[in-house]
Length: 101
Figure (tube, rainbow, N blue to C red):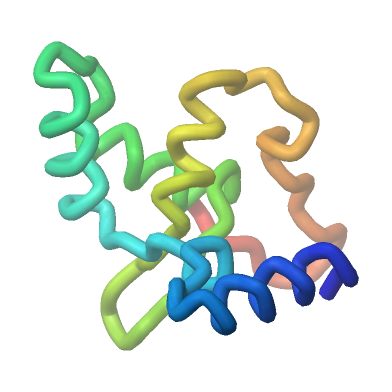
């Protein structure tokens, strides 16, 4: 962790305020689609498209049982700049068994 981040957390703890940066907003695909609809009722981003972003590796995910979780802030960041370098799909490893998507 960076020193400034630790200082922010310590200052917020002393003030009795919890830092929102420490806890990512992890959501399932359907929860994220609902939240996006609430933020922008005319959005064209569907649950299907969000799921494809997760399965192709564009959005980093974490599995919790059968659920696929990802950071909602990362999805919003992707929507603002989909051409950013961090959102390029990862190339498949050479050799071995590859997952068919």
